[in-house]
Image (cartoon, rainbow over the protein chains, first blue to last red):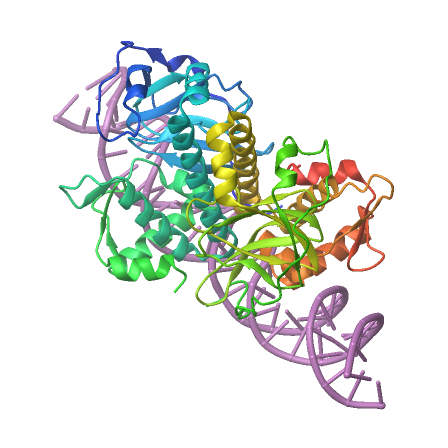
Length: 236
Length: 236
DNA sequence: CGTCCAGTTGATGTAAATCAAACCCAGTGG
DNA sequence: CCACTGGGTTTGATTTACATCAACTGGACG
């Protein structure tokens, strides 16, 4: 058969996670829920190490502090789809019922805060505020997921990449600098957008030569024509 | 450009919905929440009429009683993606925040129960049970959505159709008969699976001639080799 | 009986996949 | 300090699954 992603991908050793100090930093104000910040423990995850695997019982929620995490699903023959990337500030695993339905791996060396699920769930039972917050997160993710389904089902490679780059840029607002870090590999991007590494590459160079973006290095991005990119991402 | 779904799709008249008796039938036991059954009003929706449009403020939740409903998103140039089909018993719009992010239309003449959102939301604030039920629904939908993202991003037409048919069959368990009704058109299926009408058609005949399914009419389906279909759907 | 529309089948075109080969670092070790 | 290595990236040639274009079928309906 002729189809994407026939690389074979195996479980890497899970041992690369190590628990550090139990008292996390307070990034007050940003989170709806100051309480949460007192409940987690900081975990370091090395590049390509897993936070959890598909099928694992969902005992923890996570929040990214630094670095990037990808959540992905695999087919038996090795085809992979990355459902989403998580950057600093993003929550992971909130949507889990009893078991995780995706594997979560670090894109690069990352630090995350880990929350015991039973504690959070207990909190939810008492505080409708926390419950609403979680529900809101999940609803937002579902909405994103549907937008991405439209993308995967109906958009061209150009449109997909434009959409992706805009989303990443919007989410990794460093504010100061307009050069955006792009921690994931071309193959990660491909597996996220339903394309091959090669097609992602070609589309990058195409967007570059059309003057829509600039990429000083493979992991740095600069958006030059925001308007044109947005039009592409809308399917224009 | 050469891409899918360049049919032009316009807003049909919304007027085809009519409110009927305010007292809905009790299908007791099936729902976690007997209370809900006393709160909705039954609405009849004609084929292709909309329950709501993308962008409408989300004032109601819905549950399908009979018939089928599709929820879809449109691109400016008419490309369409059907995010999901809803059959008898399914809830619609539970994931909405303030506005609906998809349009919901009847696939065929359908009856749905309509719940006032503010009433349900008030209920959620008081009863954690109801809240958990809603959260569970949304999480399950998100999980489904991700599975479908894998499908759209990485699977062949054969695999997509096999997966779709199995899912529909599992959900429309009439129990008695093994011929499953398929209310949607080939074009609906195409827009759901990221394929064209023609490809859906060809894939149907292909699965038929391979003896995996039988289709006495375009809107009736019989699964012959469940195993083989499941293998396909798993990407085997 | 014509019109219409969903479905089907065939011929042809093309975007993106596959196959293949450089290239470009960042490490590593002699 | 430089050769060697290996993973990610890039570019080119070729193939292919599916889209597009086009024509025909058959049932529903006035």
